[in-house]
Amino acid sequence: EKDGQPREMEDRGFTLRAIISGLLVGVLISVSNTYYGLRVGSGSRMYMVSGLLGFAGFKVLSRYTTRALHPEENVLIISVATATGCMPLTAGLIGAIPAIEYLIGPSENGPLVKGLGSLTLWSIGLCFFGIVFTALLREQFVEREPLPWPGARAASQLIRTLHRISSKQSTLPSSQVQEEDGETSNEPPTREFHAVSHGVDDIDWEVGMNRLIQGAIGSGIFVQSVVLKFVPILHELPVFGHGAAQWAWNMDLSPGFLGQGIVIGPYISLHMLTGAIVGWGILAPYAKSRGWAPGLVDDWTAGARGWIIWVSMASLLADASVKLGWFVLRPVWRYYLARGNSHQQTATAGGDYTWRQSQEEEDQNYRSGESGADPEILADEESHSHTLGERTPLLDSRRTLQSQETILRKSHISTRTLGLAFLVSLIVLSQLVFAALISHSNPSAVIINLISAAMAVAGASQSGDLAFDLKIGSMMGASPDAQTHGQLIGSVFGAFIACGIYKLYTSRYAIPGSLFRVPSAYLVLSTSRLLLGHGLPEGVGPFVLAAAVFSIVSSVVKMRYEDRRWEKFIPSGVSFAIGIYLLPSYSITCAVGGLIYEAYRRYNNNRQGTTIVFASGLILGESVASLVMLALLE
Image (cartoon, rainbow, N blue to C red):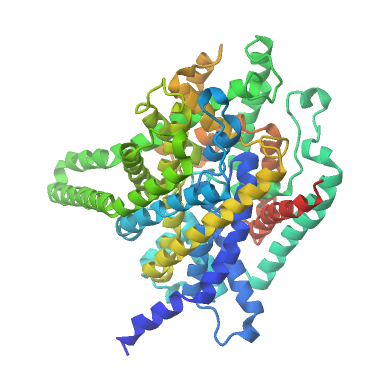
């Protein structure tokens, strides 16, 4: 009987019906990530929505099934859906690819436009990095290190609630369950506004599905497909008057933006609004008045937006540098602190051994990663040589190997930091590395820099996403092998789906245009040009320095006093930068959503109820309805 138990666990943890369900849910998430990625550069994991949709689907079809959905199958649904839905981010379809296809001019050997087949081949070449490296790093970070996992905790708690599993029935030891239940997240999930950091109340699946459907219908069918289609001014509503509207101070009544504000909460959304006030309310008019940004306000080249983006970039880069620096120095700092305790020499020796053992384990995992990634490097090089062709002759085996080295290091960072490192921050750091390896006189230097950075960030981004899945499985006692296989299937399927959705949008909408402004593409392209010697715009230097100093001080203070109540009121460099490089219309709507969430929570005695589920319905409804809108375009 004992010998048969593991096989039974494996059979019910990896089933065809769970894989198909995960793929279907992943398609919805992929649509959402492509839509919002092209609009505002954000994406979403949507773990809770995946788990709820998977469970509800089997509940509705329970009369046609012989057995109920097992919790491990629900974990597999989340794993497959995440791998499928996050491919637009992994493949660079919201940043590097739009920049290469639509923003680079002939002077930089562009644009480099490829068909659906070539783009799919590129995506398939990237879809395995994060899975391989996450699997290699799983033992260290998921199983051993006591890292906080607020998003994974919330998802596992939802699964336990849906399947009526108490904490005592959980596969975790009781002490660990209490530790997981007591976790909080002080760092905003701003990478894609995707990890729900709020607590999770007990959710009845019928009530949850009703809220999800209500949000989707209200957002998609009524608002997106009817109101905003025939009353387009609601996308740029001049709530502060026409004078302020000339400086882009409008409000976008996008239900998806409102939902994202509810998900990220009041503090982060207000921090973004603070960045918008500084960037668009102070710096943009000042640059215009001094003649430094003579073009239209929303012009990325000669306007105020193209000027203040450098302030945003400085804040992003400084924030990322501080956090990554602390990530490297923290083990050393703790080691020397332990050695300083002379009255606990025995404990110090134990700490010395533990620290050295941890470092040796990480080094061993790193070497294993380099060895295990070799076949993927060859496949990646082959796919990218077919995709990029003669336009990037310097993207050879040496540079591909350097990309994989950078991928592994950033996968290590992304996994350990729980994927909370803002995606654009990782891209900027990767571009900085590869700029030093490329001849600035090469006419394809910008393209090579963008492609190399996209390859490096792909694995890191995916590692942060999939590490959450493995932690959810660890909390629920699911098979990591089953999850890894599901992630492989979801990633390959997601490569086809993401490229198809991307081409569908770009073939019918103007890129860049009034709807899809591709801010992430402009940001990474501007970074590439700066690092390759194009220089800063006139007058922006002192403000760039000031933004970097502010971001450094803010990051240090927030890390040093992360347990203080007042810490949440200090804007992080990331949220501050997002408010600057995105239009105020987004930040305003998000702030309204965050305040709605806070008001609801206070009115209901600190219980969020189904607000997050309803907000997810708003997000999904608008993005899915946007595909329907394609049929209405003339």
